[in-house]
Length: 60
Image (cartoon, rainbow, N blue to C red; front, side, top):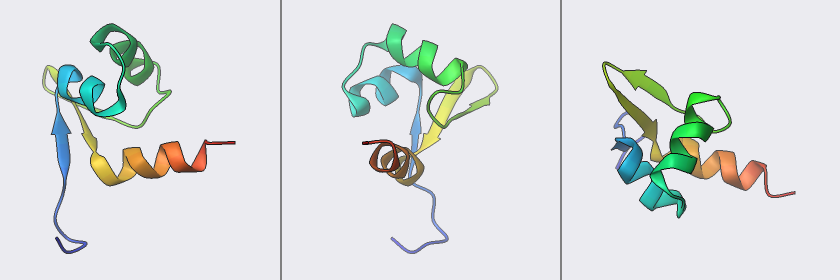
């Protein structure tokens, strides 16, 4: 995948599975801006690379 392509995760359930949290925990974190994401229509979406970078930066 080159840098111009997006690697998106759509929906709270899919995002929750990716970060190993419940959908309820994930919805709370994303809606409060605690993890990067954007609401598109009625669904939340995150860029997989942004999410990985976020957790790597906040390890400490």
